[in-house]
Image (cartoon, rainbow, N blue to C red):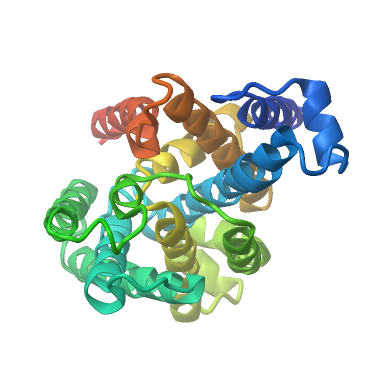
Amino acid sequence: MRYRVVTGVLLLLFAVLILLNIGIGSVKISVSGIVSSVLGEGFGTNEYDIIWKVRLPRVAAGVILGGALALSGFLLQAFFNNPIAGPFTLGISSGAKLVVALVMVFVLGGRSSSSVMLIASAFIGAMLSMDFVLRIARKVRRASVLIISGVMIGYLCSAVTDFVVTFASDDGIVNLHSWSRGSFSGMSWDNVWVMTAVVFCASVSAFLLSKQIGAYQLGESYAQSVGVNIKMFRMLLVLLASILCACVTAFAGPVSFVGVAVPHLVKAFAKTSKPLLIIPLCFLGGAVFCLGCDLIARTVYVPIEMSISSVSSIFGAPIVIYMMARKVARD
């Protein structure tokens, strides 16, 4: 019953935020105008072009990438058995961001890049960071040391990225500065189709692993006793989490704390940790969270647009601090 209530509330927020994100901006569009434009009426009008060429692709990206980020965080939390693990706190997003920035500046220069190349670059960066984190995790069992190491990796990668961005030519690299701070702006339908394909495949794969994740949460010994191949299972978790994180970073840059805060909130409100239920709810929660953050980022100081990562940090960081304090108190 509680799960259904939480799902209903999230679906309601989802619908409201989609309408607000489409309707609010430098040009305000009424609900009737949104409906008529979505149905294909008013082709060629200013409202129609704003909705179909600017706002709908951005909203779609917020939904897809927000869900992907939350799901990536959930998979990492299951992998490390740590509620504070996430793409941002472990430095994985920063590693992906660094490699993408290096490719955009030194390999592509002023040339346009394909979505596949950006995702591949981000995946390589995410895997390199994940490899470093895993090496630390094998030697150090304390969760606090793991998180601190991840944060340090993130700071180091971000510092190098900022250095690269600072000395890059703005004429030849479109949206590099805004991308490096995290943004859903400048999305096209081509971007949306590519991210949809990647995130859909990874999300379905994660959902199909629900039973194994549930068994793994009860301990490696129990998971092995019910037939889970631990080595292969852990490899799949790392790959899926890295692919989801890489897709987000490639298109929107680093987005902070969503991967930690959303899975925690979803499990807290739904009062369940069953992966079969939590995975779709996490995706929906991530979409709602990012739609809300994006709405705030682009409307509070119009015409100036804030970094979405700054907004997500305002809401996500206190949740992470609370989780760390609670974990320390329990230990």
